[in-house]
Amino acid sequence: MATRRLEGWLSKSAGSAVLEANLAGFLAPLEAMAGRIPEARERLALSRELTDELGLRWQTGTHDLLGGFIEMLAGDPVAAEAHLQTAVDMFTAMGDMWFLSIVSTEQARALFEQDRDEDALSLIERLDASPGEPPDNLRYQIRRRDILGRILARRGDLDAGLGLAEEAVEIAGRTDYLGFHADALCGLADVHRRRARPEDAMAVLGEAIELYDRKGNLVRSSEARSLFEALGRGVATVRGSIGA
Image (cartoon, rainbow, N blue to C red):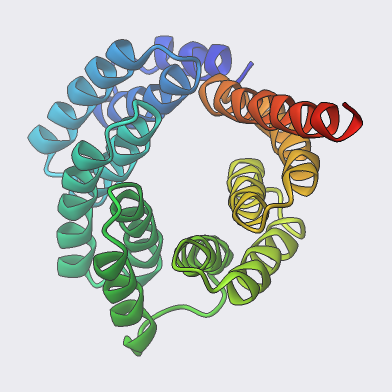
């Protein structure tokens, strides 16, 4: 529905290059969530070319944030990191700490996916120490706890990781950020999995799948379903061996 609405607005935006550039850019992640990664990349590249020609620095930074999102959906955290670093540089130069905090946590997530925990922690620590970090940026607060919780759990500090993951889910549940909420639930599932609690992981994955479906993020929904099914097979195998 969101895609059709944006496409309708885009068809009516002829004559307004600024509007066309913005609408085309925001259509790109919707294409990516539907699994149409090449189309998403092409649409974003065309949109970014327009914003560059028009000298729209803020929109260009936003496009690189969206580029990071698309590449993470494509399973390429290295390419995502490159997009996000460009966005970090752009928002730093503009002094836009609100968007810088969002972009930085997305970059930390890309680093985490590359097993670069120290770099991810360093990035978050620098942002925490910045006097300009906006305390009311809930997206930052959710993602920060999600990433830190996953890192701590991967390092073996399961209790601290669980606490942060649960905080991320609790904060996200008070917002209408369906994607952030679903991601936080997947982070909590990851911690439960590392705690050898597959049934708890499956429970929160079920919630994440529902939210991804509502958001229209078919890529993440499919990934969460695959993990849910794999955990279910493992639980069934364990139960079968006990009953044998």
